[in-house]
Amino acid sequence: MKKLTVLLAATALSGTAMAADPWDGRDDLPTSPLACDGTPATVAAKDYDGGQPTGAPDLSGQDITLIDVPKLVGIGYFAATTEGMRQAAEELGNVNVTTDGPTEANIDDQITFIDNYITQGVNGVLFAANDPVAIAPVLKRALGEGIHVVGYDANSEPDAREWFVNQAEFNGIGKALIDAMAAEIGEDGKFAIVTSTFTTPNQARWIAEMQDYQEACFPNMEWLETVEAQEDNILSFNQANTLINKYGDDLDGIFGMTSVATPASAEAVTQAGVCGDTAVVGLATPNAMKPYVASGCVKSVVLWNPVDLGYAAVYATRAVVDGNLAPGSTSVEAGRLGTLQVVNGSEILLGAPFVYTADNIDDFDF
Image (cartoon, rainbow, N blue to C red):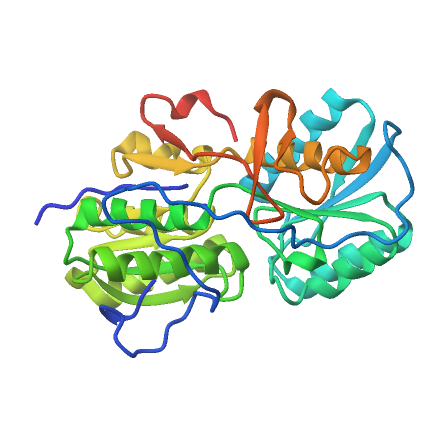
């Protein structure tokens, strides 16, 4: 069977039809897999389930200072969200936002950064969580100090923040990933996954939705293994290379669940000389994938725009401070992005993913 190498960036199962084997990489929350035939889902209204700050000062229209603490700094994805935040702050004119955080995706270090900025005094905390449960206490401390808290990219427990800007709905990403892999390796192909950690919330959500959608729609596909790579480029490459060597011809495809793991997996496939035999499907930023798209080893990249994600997070925070985004709101105005919808009680949906191909990928620089 001829296989093409593709990347789907929009944002794992063990054993055929995921029998009773233990599953690594998903969370244990309920899923809502989309229909196999693409029938749109019906979304039920949900009450606001976020937290609220205690005694937050009235700073409507006044200058505010925000600190952004992503999973880690020094990678293209979060450099792009930072740029979006800068653009929003410049447009608004009354927001000062600074990005600071750990150089590795370590939840303990992330907590320390947030804790230090709470002590120093800020008006708002933006975050992308490395662990939804472990980060909750320090975010609740921020709320208790009257500091506004808004998440993006990777959520916390809902009551530990006011709002979460969701880049795309998890079941939509899960369906898109599985559909792309099935199109490339066939409905009985075998694949593995390279993720960050088994507790990283957005990846765990995507994987859970992927698993349940795959079981329902492509039951003959076989998920071989899930491995962690800590959002580290060298480790991601080594993990992908190990999968290639371990499974040989049985490995029809690799999912990369992070903006680090996907290009590293594409590089491992390239160096192993199996480009065109082992598909790469996953999440990444355009700049990281341009060499693989140019070589023809990767055909398309599907991803939300992380610049827009950071931009939306700042606009949402400004709206919260100004009283324009509150429990019960159904939408929020976000500058050039227009009106963004509130879903799932306290989430703001950025919108549909964007598809990068050889025809347009050079138009983007992040």
